[in-house]
Image 1: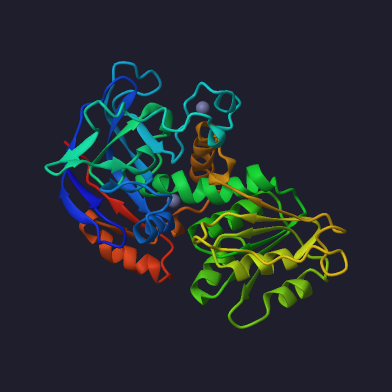
Image 2: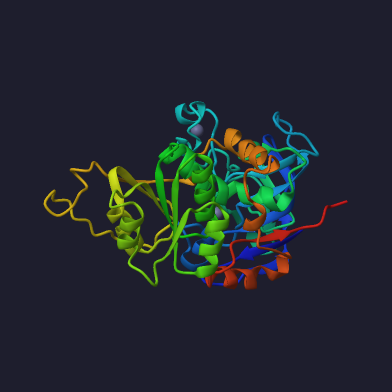
Length: 371
Ligand SMILES: [Zn+2]
Ligand SMILES: [Zn+2]
């Protein structure tokens, strides 16, 4: 099958022929129909991410059709439409049994035995799969614990972006912040994840949803996704602007989708009483936040403010992915405007450049049905 393989940090994807193994035990062979290109793929291309070995197959926003199943697969059958998740829950530890899949105690439990035939290889040897997935290819061999069957009425392109951008942005709002009706929210960075935080905050009943970005087209999208106000932080002081919008009360929740420390520092300054900043977007190595904590200089203590991380939106994806599908099919979640461009696998390198330079919300690679 054809795949876009990354052979080294900073290199371009190589479109090449890769051999994919037959599914064993709990593995599922998926005909990939749509595969989203995400900022965290770029992050791995540029930095090596969290130390993954090369060569590697990226692509973690996958929607497709089950083509074959291993002998022990019980939850899925051939022909099911599926979405993949970028978590590898063992399904047996205390966290998994409690639905806290992101906190699984056994990372790597779903990988093949290193002594076994690799799932992917070419004439140079084995090829890794980032997070056990590998969606930049015509097919993907994935452990069943990472897949969820969805309503076949769901279009593949829109289904693919649920696996990362939607669960990350929506989960930060629904599961981590637990935004309540009447609350106020600021979202710093209105790319794919930010737009989902905006639309789910509106769904949760937040009465003020403020989108912050430096690109006017992203701010226009923020309005389309339900932002009540937008701020171009390249033109005005965002802390002052949010102070004016909230009559100096500040916001209950500030989500930081982009990695620049100045954004997180501004987010802290726009919090109200009991407000929390959520760090959602990946930051570069060496990033530090400067925080004053003295009650004489900062409201963090007297206003009981907090900063916390949010990882894939604390998602129990077995529950959350079908929920987002239902919301989309009911016309209550806008995923159509998130898929700004569909491309062929061969166009992946130029789509990466477009993503790097901003503007485009999401390119999704599509594949024709296999006969
Ligand atoms: Zn587990
Ligand atoms: Zn992603």
